[in-house]
Amino acid sequence: MASSHHKKNQIFLGTFIHSVKLGELQYMHDMAVCVDKFGKIVAVEPQRDLENVMENVKETLCQKLAWDAHDLAVTIAKEGQFFFPGFIDTHIHAPQYPNAGIFGKSTLLDWLNKYTFPMESSLASLPKARRVYASCIRRTLAHGTTTAAYYATLHVEPTNLLADLCLAAGQRAFVGRVCMDDRDVNPAYYRDESADEALARTRAAVDHVRAIDPAFALVSPILTPRFAPSCTRECMARLGALRRSYGGGGDVEELPVQTHIAENAAELALVKAMFPECDSYADVYDRHGLLGARTVLGHAVHLTDAEISLVARRGAGVAHCPCSNSALTSGEAPVRRLLDAGVGVGLGTDVSGGYSASVLEAARQAALVSNHRAMPVGKWADVPDGERERARLSVEEVLHLATRGGAGVLGLGARVGGFDVGLEWDAQLVGLGLVAERPDVEHEYEHGHGHHGTRATDRGNVDIFGWETWEERVAKWVFGGDDRNVKKVWVRGRLVHERE
Image (cartoon, rainbow, N blue to C red; front, side, top):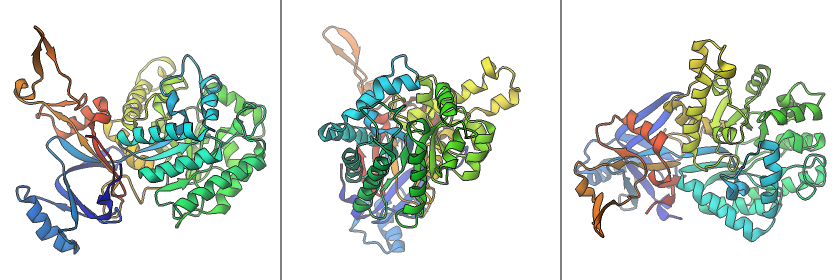
């Protein structure tokens, strides 16, 4: 939904929670965050006089900022609500959205051929693509995703349509036309016919985004070799040259890149057989000019120490996709090892290998998967206890990955991810269900037709009783929350989603 509020100066009042660094959340109570007409945070001020809040806002903040108090939008968080930065999905396949939750008993390579390629190829139909992409964008916004790095299909017009729809909906997005020209790996009905065709189609998609958003202020193109086995050496080398030569919008010198790496054991064997001259999977991308500061590597489950070191040196980042890695039995990504090595990590839903378009779900699964790495069983049995324990990711850490971590991976760290002055207002208003002291006040129970029953409410799964600390409230939200807790969502100050 569109809103005219992004054309006004805005003030947001209440509790604000954001990550200030890995493992540390900052809780700012009774605060006012001031956002200008361009969607940028220009002031963060204590707001003590809540009883006379509107008068105080107009008398003090508007005067201080030289704003017209009559041309102002004010949003006040209610009891049980708080503002949180918008989630950043660093890895999601928009054309696979209809298949979310469908993976049968497949592992990666079988799943691609049975479910994924047929669905993606069918989106050559623009009406079908519009239906799927509009639904995907609506769903991700409803889950609080303000930025998404989308893989599209290999078709140019449907990919351009996805970019158009993101821009119209107001979602910050990276939109990539997938490149896949290897004749031996890709099905005949769904592939680029040559490296020339792959590059020409990619340029067309990049040019379209530049035409609709010249500065890449909201929507950016992203080069998308599907994964090394799907591309010929010539295709990857030419994409690498395009990355360096094309230039981005504004101050961006190079185009970003997204691809997959070290997701599955069978995939590793395939890469080794196809690229025997390369030292490793990561080396394949490095030799073809695709490993750089704005490269997003999906999964990274089975990287060696040497590969992790290479990725860190090149400044590339990792999209951690715990739901997909579990659903397709790919493995448990070594997130702590990546972080310790200086590799930036964000979260990806990886729909439809992942079953949910919710980054909050990815966050809770990231915590649970890290716990599995800490358990003294299987291949981790011989690992020292202290090292195993360090593998665990806390609530504060997974929320960092969901916001600032993802922003860093996508090269947006100076623009979004928190509530600092100078950042853009990409945010969600989260509401948790406050349980009344007397159940009859909520009408939780009602009589009907001679039996007792309960009536469901739409406030979500998280019940707050009032005695929880804020840290406990956030933990309950992470492990029990869903889209029903997302009351409003803004991108660059524009209201893009509101739950009635």
